[in-house]
Image (cartoon, rainbow, N blue to C red; front, side, top):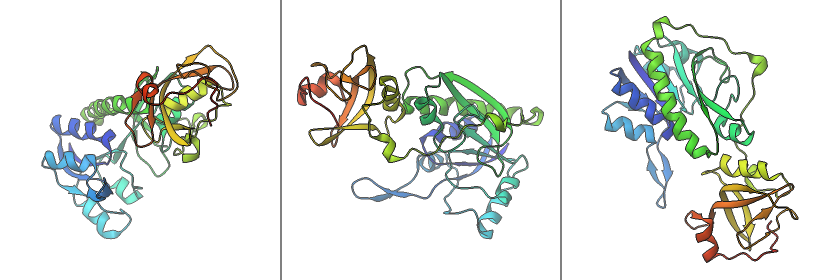
Amino acid sequence: MKIAFMGTPDFAVPALVACHEAGHDVVCVYTQPPRPAGRGKKLQPSPVHRKAEELGIEVRHPTSLKNDAAQAEFAALQADVAVVAAYGLILPQVILDAPRHGCLNIHASVLPRWRGAAPIHRAILAGDEETGVTIMQMEAGLDTGPMLAKVMTPINAKTTGELTEELAELGANAMVGVLNDLEHLTAIPQDDDAATYAPKIDKAEARIDWSKPAAEIERLARGLAPFPGAWFELDGVRVKLLRAELADRAGNPGEVLDDELTIACGSGAIRPLRLQRAGKPKMDREDFLRGNPVAKGTILS
């Protein structure tokens, strides 16, 4: 297959590597433009950009695909298919139609559940028992296209970061399988009536409300780890809760119940396992408490 690859973050890198290693001809990589990052705010290429350069593949990073020049450049590739994974730009219909087999997307949910920007976060926050990836034929709607393959995996106690890495690998393998059998596959339409949506995480969602049930707060910690991170205030300093376990205790919401930092919630309690004080490295609870002892009876906000 002659492939145009379109992706930006770490999630997309395994798919790029898999397409390349499977012997397909990745003729060009499209990715988001370099962004300022780090202390010096120097322009940094995306993870996909860096990997494409390592593989010796041409990289393009237009700010838009809506102008005639960008669309003509894309069409001139004469690609058999475009492989898309978390690219970050809207693809106009002329782009979707340009490759011989159209554009195939790796979406990090089992469609039609969790269409939209944050499917992994939302699956964890909702308490879903499993999720997966879907290889989808792209169309103009938001993740509405017909499906070519699905792969499932249990969520268990995984964080968004852990699940993202797993789904990236599953998606890469599923995409290679689809490409190898594309001529013989039939795309299956989605059931729009069963669709749910995964809006982008709002910053306001990250602050922990201790009046919520313990199970909901535990999922919030995992669902927002590592970024943006569920957080609370301790002595006026923001502390991220990156992982927690449920505890069979009760008290006033936000009350510290013992010397192990067990915290009462609206129902039940949680015990932090992994925390990060603002400006400090991530720590296990024991290490955190050695440097930041929290007295029993403290009320967290």
